[in-house]
Length: 97
Image (tube, rainbow, N blue to C red; front, side):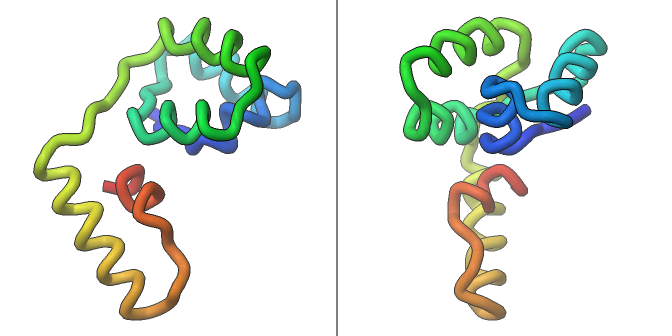
């Protein structure tokens, strides 16, 4: 099972390889899940044509919600990262959680 990052969807929809092939292959196999974080990030970065393509893809995935446990884990990841480096966005920590 794969939980692709937003950039994978953006590149695949724009026709970039190997992202497009990766998504096609794993959609057919039922190996893709998507986070509500990815949905939000995608719409923040996309244009109307990309949004239409993404909306069509969304019907093919299970969408993972963020619950209290996931939010707590994301916060702990972010705190641990900030102690080591300034890198690491909270949204990426939600995906990791």
